[in-house]
Amino acid sequence: MSDVLLSIRNVQKFYGRLAAVGGVSLDIRDNEFFALLGASGSGKTTLLRMLAGFETPTSGAILLDGQDVSAVPPNHRPVNLMFQSYALFPHMTVAQNIAYGLEMDRMPRSEIRTRVDEMLEVIQLSHLSGRKPEQLSGGQRQRVALARALVKRPRVLLLDEPLGALDKKLRGEMQLELKRIQDEFGITFIVVTHDQEEALVMADRVAILKDGLLLQCGTPHEIYEHPESRFAADFIGVMNFLPVRVQGGRLVAENGNVFKGALPNGLGEGDEAVVAVRPERLRLGASDGDNSLTGRVAATAYHGLDLQLHLDTPNSPGPVLVRLTADAAEGRVYREGEEVTVGWSARDTRVFPA
Image (cartoon, rainbow, N blue to C red):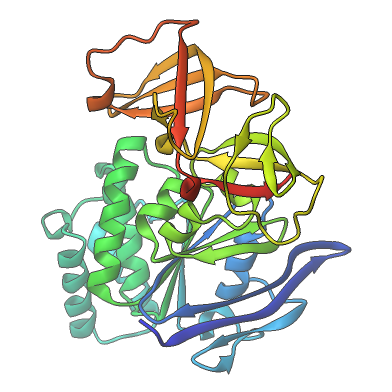
């Protein structure tokens, strides 16, 4: 999966003086599941629309197989876009919906039947080929829309918030289903989402966008464990931030606590910073580690798979979150006001400018 299929080179998109996308460069590989992740207004959907051909870059280039397609109309690109709404024809059956694009291309009927049957097998809905969309569940309609987009065998499939209309349980199931279909079909998927969990579960690599700019691109593990900015650290998963100041090369909190962690380039003596640590990296009672702090239990939140403690501590203006596995929390009751000490390793510490 080393061959570059799609190359985005310093692409900008302006609406008047507003920069919706401000100079993004990315290489996306053949057969890769790639996620564009960001909050509303981050530029991810505008970038997707430029890849689809519905918007033209103000500057920069979009190369597909080495050819500049920046000004090529959508219907002349080997790219398909699957919308969040699915947009299935209500008067057509499942098979007819899947076949529609091929019929518009005037493909021979025998070839259409072969391709539709193939897609019905891939999405595991052969037994429902004669049903209308209103007779299907949300997940089934989503798979039909996916099959309709894939049946034309595009080089790239673009998915705009594809799971947004599904409930939480079904969304989790469809994340794995999309990954299975992408792997089985062997084409490049590019998904736009604001859901961090969705991006981490499905994608081979994730690009984080903010205000039209690319903040970080990497594997799910890289962006979760090694965020390159405070925004990325806060946006991906849950992170505790502890205000400190650099004094004598050490990270010193206002109450005198000293924390260990690698200082990033650009932080110097007297600079304000924040120590960042994930809730699952905190260990109860571990006062003998590289770092530790003491707080009082303000609240507990039981999630089934884990128990989350909210600790009030002078080291943070907000509660420090501690995530315990169900096994670690079994049989232990944490009462409001109880004093708790937590510790963590210096290697689990990230430091960012304040």
